[in-house]
Amino acid sequence: MTGPARQCARMVGRQPEKYADAIGRLVEVIGRHDAAWLAWFAASGVRPYVVSYEDLDADLVGVTHAVLDFLGLTLPAGAAAVPRHRRQADQLNREWIRRYRAVSTGAGTRVARPR
Image (cartoon, rainbow, N blue to C red; front, side, top):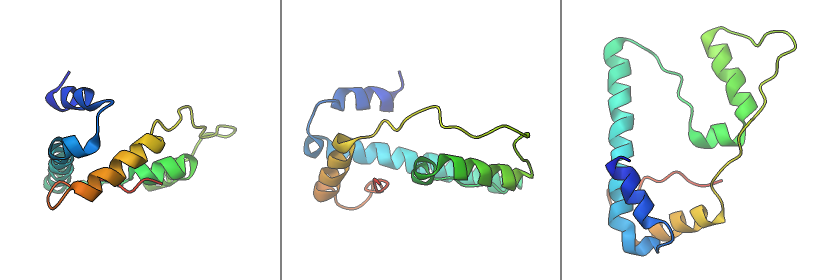
C-alpha cells in the first residue's frame, strides 16, 4: 500500500475537519501527477484526449464514443459500450467534500465538484 493509500485508509470513518491538512496534501499529490502527465504529453508531442471523472461518471457511453471518435475508431457492428461498474461515491463522499471545503483555505483545495 502506498503512502497516500495508507493515509486514506487511516481516515476512513473519521471527521474530515480533523484531516483537512492530510486531504489537502493528497489533493496536491493528484495535482502534481496531473501536471507531470501534461508535461510528459507535451514533451512527447502527444495531444491527449482529456476525460474528467465527472464527465465519465455522468455519461460513460457518450464519453466512450467520444474517445473512439478521437482515435478514429468505431465499435464493431452489433457491439455496444455498456457500463459494467457502478459509481462508488455516495452522500458520505459529498458530505466530506463539503465539510473539507468549509474548513480548508488555500492550496490543496482542488476537489472535484460532486454531481
